[in-house]
Image (cartoon, rainbow, N blue to C red; front, side, top):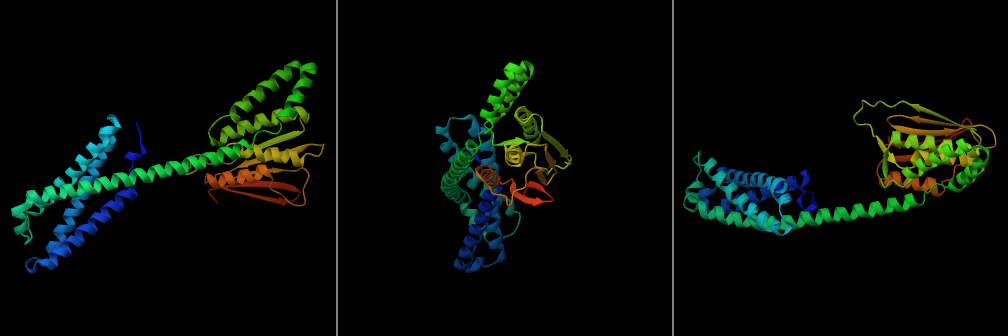
Length: 334
């Protein structure tokens, strides 16, 4: 069981520890100036140490609670358990600092010695109130993140829905002709189309590069029915798969869309060569077909560029050089 209400990031813990230390520091200043007999640096040290001790106990109690106790309980008991543990964090955190610092001869301990138990209870109730605020803050923070994620997913799905393969009707028409002339080839083409569409309806926005390449190969095989095997596909894989930082996933339809764009705008009736070069830092798709005066980003290319930005994968660039039209997905904005 995993719930956003139980997630506390490292940054959250750093903020909690910082606030606790500052709180202890300001309390020590208050005591420092209130009582002339306690105007020693040891007073500030004891207060800050107590605040850090409480923060550490809070970390331990909340970690144990969130990882091992709350996931096994009904949500209606979460508040009760959380607040009990919040109280214990302050209570035991202060007791630990009191008994630990008791090994040193500190003037402030002469006052604390008479009220150590009452002070521990008061601090426990204080951390109880802090725990209540923290619980609401963390819950609201991560619910807001889920809301943002849902909006992002909606945007991505909307963009993906605009990328439905335009070649579908052409492919079906070509297959209908093959049914009468070459039934074996027609059967293979139908299986390829089914494989392509099965991948197309996959709900994942990101896919493995190898999966995308397989999809591109299937797509070219289907297109070659109509173009009579005049689409020549070459794939150059220069990836260093030992590099653990290598990004293995890319947006679905990204390479396929660039290949489709090359066929749609580059095929001139003769052979069309399409080369896909894969590197750790980029994916390059180039063709030697018809060269336009300028590259215009239509719906497909514009959507791919947006998806790369939304998913924070990289950027899309294009160029015309030496009678070659090249599109490059630069991974990680490199």
